[in-house]
Image 1 (spheres, rainbow, N blue to C red):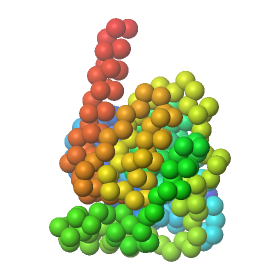
Image 2: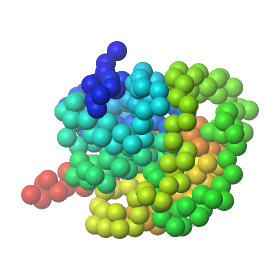
Image 3: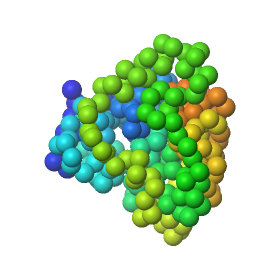
Length: 267
Protein backbone atom coordinates (compact mmCIF):
# COMPACT_ATOMS: atom_id res chain seq x y z
CA UNK A 1 0.00 0.00 0.00
CA UNK A 2 1.65 3.28 -1.10
CA UNK A 3 1.83 5.76 1.75
CA UNK A 4 3.58 9.09 2.12
CA UNK A 5 4.95 10.19 5.53
CA UNK A 6 3.43 13.65 5.91
CA UNK A 7 2.92 15.81 8.99
CA UNK A 8 3.27 12.99 11.45
CA UNK A 9 1.07 10.36 9.77
CA UNK A 10 1.14 8.14 6.69
CA UNK A 11 -1.14 9.45 3.93
CA UNK A 12 -2.45 6.70 1.65
CA UNK A 13 -2.40 7.59 -2.04
CA UNK A 14 -2.63 6.03 -5.49
CA UNK A 15 -1.13 7.30 -8.74
CA UNK A 16 -2.51 6.11 -12.07
CA UNK A 17 -1.27 6.97 -15.54
CA UNK A 18 1.98 8.29 -16.96
CA UNK A 19 3.90 10.14 -14.26
CA UNK A 20 5.19 12.62 -16.85
CA UNK A 21 1.64 13.60 -17.91
CA UNK A 22 -0.21 16.61 -16.50
CA UNK A 23 -1.47 15.75 -13.01
CA UNK A 24 -5.00 15.74 -11.65
CA UNK A 25 -5.42 15.38 -7.89
CA UNK A 26 -8.83 14.24 -6.67
CA UNK A 27 -9.89 15.08 -3.09
CA UNK A 28 -12.84 13.11 -1.72
CA UNK A 29 -15.69 14.15 0.53
CA UNK A 30 -16.62 13.22 4.09
CA UNK A 31 -18.57 10.15 2.97
CA UNK A 32 -15.85 8.85 0.67
CA UNK A 33 -12.17 8.03 0.29
CA UNK A 34 -9.74 7.50 -2.58
CA UNK A 35 -12.05 4.89 -4.13
CA UNK A 36 -14.80 7.47 -4.67
CA UNK A 37 -13.16 8.59 -7.90
CA UNK A 38 -13.19 5.29 -9.81
CA UNK A 39 -15.42 6.76 -12.54
CA UNK A 40 -12.96 9.60 -13.09
CA UNK A 41 -9.62 7.78 -12.79
CA UNK A 42 -10.69 5.12 -15.29
CA UNK A 43 -11.44 7.84 -17.85
CA UNK A 44 -8.67 10.39 -17.31
CA UNK A 45 -5.67 8.17 -16.51
CA UNK A 46 -5.07 7.49 -20.20
CA UNK A 47 -4.12 11.15 -20.70
CA UNK A 48 -3.29 12.44 -17.22
CA UNK A 49 -1.50 11.36 -14.09
CA UNK A 50 -4.42 10.80 -11.72
CA UNK A 51 -3.69 10.97 -8.01
CA UNK A 52 -6.23 9.96 -5.39
CA UNK A 53 -5.64 9.89 -1.66
CA UNK A 54 -7.31 9.41 1.70
CA UNK A 55 -7.60 12.51 3.84
CA UNK A 56 -6.16 12.05 7.32
CA UNK A 57 -8.71 10.14 9.38
CA UNK A 58 -10.30 8.57 6.31
CA UNK A 59 -9.64 5.28 4.53
CA UNK A 60 -6.12 4.03 5.16
CA UNK A 61 -4.73 7.39 6.35
CA UNK A 62 -5.03 6.54 10.01
CA UNK A 63 -4.92 9.48 12.42
CA UNK A 64 -5.03 9.47 16.20
CA UNK A 65 -8.64 9.53 17.41
CA UNK A 66 -9.61 13.08 18.34
CA UNK A 67 -6.59 14.69 16.66
CA UNK A 68 -7.06 17.74 14.38
CA UNK A 69 -8.16 16.71 10.89
CA UNK A 70 -9.48 19.54 8.70
CA UNK A 71 -6.87 21.92 10.10
CA UNK A 72 -4.13 19.83 8.45
CA UNK A 73 -5.76 19.21 5.07
CA UNK A 74 -3.98 21.95 3.13
CA UNK A 75 -0.52 21.18 4.51
CA UNK A 76 -1.18 17.46 3.92
CA UNK A 77 -2.05 18.07 0.27
CA UNK A 78 1.00 20.30 -0.15
CA UNK A 79 3.18 17.63 1.39
CA UNK A 80 1.71 14.93 -0.84
CA UNK A 81 2.38 16.90 -4.03
CA UNK A 82 5.93 17.59 -2.86
CA UNK A 83 6.44 13.90 -2.01
CA UNK A 84 5.24 12.89 -5.49
CA UNK A 85 7.37 15.60 -7.16
CA UNK A 86 4.29 17.22 -8.68
CA UNK A 87 4.99 20.89 -9.26
CA UNK A 88 1.61 21.83 -10.73
CA UNK A 89 -1.74 20.07 -10.89
CA UNK A 90 -5.41 20.34 -11.66
CA UNK A 91 -7.37 19.96 -8.42
CA UNK A 92 -10.80 18.30 -8.29
CA UNK A 93 -12.72 18.33 -5.02
CA UNK A 94 -15.99 16.94 -3.76
CA UNK A 95 -17.61 18.36 -0.63
CA UNK A 96 -15.05 18.09 2.22
CA UNK A 97 -12.25 17.94 -0.35
CA UNK A 98 -12.99 21.59 -1.05
CA UNK A 99 -11.18 22.53 2.15
CA UNK A 100 -8.02 20.89 0.77
CA UNK A 101 -8.22 22.07 -2.83
CA UNK A 102 -9.46 25.63 -2.39
CA UNK A 103 -7.10 26.11 0.53
CA UNK A 104 -4.17 24.83 -1.55
CA UNK A 105 -5.13 27.01 -4.52
CA UNK A 106 -5.30 30.11 -2.32
CA UNK A 107 -1.92 29.30 -0.75
CA UNK A 108 -0.25 28.13 -3.97
CA UNK A 109 -2.00 29.62 -7.04
CA UNK A 110 1.19 29.23 -9.06
CA UNK A 111 0.98 25.46 -8.58
CA UNK A 112 -2.73 25.19 -9.42
CA UNK A 113 -3.46 24.64 -13.12
CA UNK A 114 -7.21 24.66 -12.56
CA UNK A 115 -9.71 24.11 -9.77
CA UNK A 116 -12.97 22.14 -9.75
CA UNK A 117 -15.21 22.51 -6.71
CA UNK A 118 -17.83 19.77 -6.85
CA UNK A 119 -20.78 20.12 -4.47
CA UNK A 120 -18.78 22.27 -2.08
CA UNK A 121 -18.29 25.81 -0.85
CA UNK A 122 -14.69 25.03 0.04
CA UNK A 123 -15.41 26.77 3.33
CA UNK A 124 -16.03 30.16 1.72
CA UNK A 125 -17.42 32.35 4.49
CA UNK A 126 -18.94 35.38 2.83
CA UNK A 127 -22.10 36.78 4.38
CA UNK A 128 -24.16 35.66 1.39
CA UNK A 129 -22.79 32.10 1.47
CA UNK A 130 -23.35 31.62 5.19
CA UNK A 131 -26.84 33.12 4.98
CA UNK A 132 -27.78 30.76 2.15
CA UNK A 133 -26.37 27.82 4.13
CA UNK A 134 -28.65 28.65 7.02
CA UNK A 135 -31.63 27.94 4.76
CA UNK A 136 -30.36 24.52 3.65
CA UNK A 137 -32.10 21.53 5.25
CA UNK A 138 -30.04 18.39 4.53
CA UNK A 139 -31.41 14.98 5.55
CA UNK A 140 -29.69 12.95 8.30
CA UNK A 141 -26.84 10.56 7.58
CA UNK A 142 -27.68 7.83 5.09
CA UNK A 143 -27.72 7.40 1.29
CA UNK A 144 -30.38 10.09 0.82
CA UNK A 145 -28.02 12.66 2.33
CA UNK A 146 -25.67 12.40 -0.64
CA UNK A 147 -27.61 10.67 -3.44
CA UNK A 148 -30.81 11.74 -5.15
CA UNK A 149 -33.96 9.72 -4.63
CA UNK A 150 -34.10 8.96 -8.33
CA UNK A 151 -30.53 7.65 -8.35
CA UNK A 152 -31.17 5.44 -5.32
CA UNK A 153 -34.32 3.97 -6.86
CA UNK A 154 -32.85 3.41 -10.31
CA UNK A 155 -29.32 2.31 -9.33
CA UNK A 156 -29.43 -0.09 -6.38
CA UNK A 157 -26.07 -1.63 -7.30
CA UNK A 158 -24.26 1.72 -7.41
CA UNK A 159 -26.01 2.83 -4.23
CA UNK A 160 -24.73 -0.32 -2.55
CA UNK A 161 -21.22 0.40 -3.84
CA UNK A 162 -21.42 3.99 -2.56
CA UNK A 163 -22.29 2.71 0.91
CA UNK A 164 -19.53 0.09 0.79
CA UNK A 165 -16.93 2.73 -0.07
CA UNK A 166 -18.12 4.88 2.82
CA UNK A 167 -18.02 1.88 5.11
CA UNK A 168 -14.26 1.52 4.59
CA UNK A 169 -13.66 4.65 6.66
CA UNK A 170 -12.68 4.30 10.32
CA UNK A 171 -14.80 5.73 13.10
CA UNK A 172 -13.77 9.31 13.87
CA UNK A 173 -16.34 10.67 16.29
CA UNK A 174 -16.91 14.41 15.85
CA UNK A 175 -14.65 15.38 12.96
CA UNK A 176 -15.50 19.08 12.71
CA UNK A 177 -16.24 18.91 8.99
CA UNK A 178 -19.93 19.81 8.93
CA UNK A 179 -19.48 22.64 11.40
CA UNK A 180 -16.35 23.77 9.54
CA UNK A 181 -18.39 24.85 6.53
CA UNK A 182 -20.28 27.31 8.73
CA UNK A 183 -17.33 29.00 10.40
CA UNK A 184 -16.87 32.70 9.76
CA UNK A 185 -13.09 32.50 9.44
CA UNK A 186 -13.10 30.82 6.01
CA UNK A 187 -12.05 32.45 2.72
CA UNK A 188 -13.70 35.80 2.05
CA UNK A 189 -13.79 38.41 -0.69
CA UNK A 190 -10.38 39.85 0.10
CA UNK A 191 -8.74 36.43 -0.19
CA UNK A 192 -9.62 36.29 -3.89
CA UNK A 193 -8.04 39.60 -4.84
CA UNK A 194 -5.96 38.98 -7.94
CA UNK A 195 -7.35 35.46 -8.38
CA UNK A 196 -6.51 34.00 -11.81
CA UNK A 197 -6.91 30.24 -11.24
CA UNK A 198 -9.42 28.82 -13.77
CA UNK A 199 -12.28 27.66 -11.57
CA UNK A 200 -15.35 25.54 -12.22
CA UNK A 201 -18.10 24.97 -9.67
CA UNK A 202 -20.35 21.95 -10.19
CA UNK A 203 -23.47 21.25 -8.14
CA UNK A 204 -26.34 18.79 -8.37
CA UNK A 205 -29.71 20.44 -8.74
CA UNK A 206 -31.00 18.22 -5.90
CA UNK A 207 -28.09 18.84 -3.53
CA UNK A 208 -29.68 19.47 -0.13
CA UNK A 209 -26.37 20.06 1.68
CA UNK A 210 -25.06 22.78 -0.63
CA UNK A 211 -28.03 23.67 -2.87
CA UNK A 212 -27.37 25.57 -6.10
CA UNK A 213 -28.30 28.87 -4.44
CA UNK A 214 -25.48 28.34 -1.94
CA UNK A 215 -22.94 27.55 -4.66
CA UNK A 216 -24.15 30.61 -6.60
CA UNK A 217 -23.03 32.73 -3.66
CA UNK A 218 -19.58 31.13 -3.81
CA UNK A 219 -19.40 31.71 -7.56
CA UNK A 220 -19.99 35.43 -7.00
CA UNK A 221 -16.83 35.62 -4.90
CA UNK A 222 -14.37 33.78 -7.14
CA UNK A 223 -13.31 35.99 -10.07
CA UNK A 224 -13.74 34.42 -13.49
CA UNK A 225 -15.34 31.27 -12.12
CA UNK A 226 -18.13 29.35 -13.85
CA UNK A 227 -20.96 27.37 -12.29
CA UNK A 228 -22.70 24.34 -13.78
CA UNK A 229 -25.82 22.66 -12.36
CA UNK A 230 -26.18 18.92 -12.99
CA UNK A 231 -29.77 17.69 -13.40
CA UNK A 232 -30.77 14.59 -11.45
CA UNK A 233 -27.80 14.72 -9.09
CA UNK A 234 -27.72 15.51 -5.41
CA UNK A 235 -24.54 15.89 -3.32
CA UNK A 236 -22.38 13.51 -5.38
CA UNK A 237 -22.55 14.66 -8.99
CA UNK A 238 -19.21 12.96 -9.72
CA UNK A 239 -20.75 9.61 -8.74
CA UNK A 240 -24.39 10.00 -9.77
CA UNK A 241 -23.84 11.66 -13.15
CA UNK A 242 -20.22 10.77 -13.88
CA UNK A 243 -20.44 11.24 -17.66
CA UNK A 244 -21.74 14.80 -17.28
CA UNK A 245 -19.26 15.58 -14.52
CA UNK A 246 -16.35 14.18 -16.55
CA UNK A 247 -17.37 16.14 -19.65
CA UNK A 248 -17.47 19.38 -17.68
CA UNK A 249 -14.08 18.95 -16.06
CA UNK A 250 -12.51 17.72 -19.33
CA UNK A 251 -13.64 20.95 -20.99
CA UNK A 252 -11.90 22.98 -18.29
CA UNK A 253 -8.71 20.93 -18.57
CA UNK A 254 -8.69 21.27 -22.37
CA UNK A 255 -9.23 25.03 -22.21
CA UNK A 256 -6.39 25.50 -19.76
CA UNK A 257 -3.98 23.29 -21.69
CA UNK A 258 -4.82 24.98 -25.00
CA UNK A 259 -4.25 28.41 -23.48
CA UNK A 260 -0.97 27.33 -21.90
CA UNK A 261 0.23 25.78 -25.16
CA UNK A 262 -0.68 28.94 -27.09
CA UNK A 263 1.22 31.02 -24.54
CA UNK A 264 4.25 28.77 -24.84
CA UNK A 265 4.25 29.14 -28.64
CA UNK A 266 3.97 32.91 -28.33
CA UNK A 267 7.02 32.96 -26.10
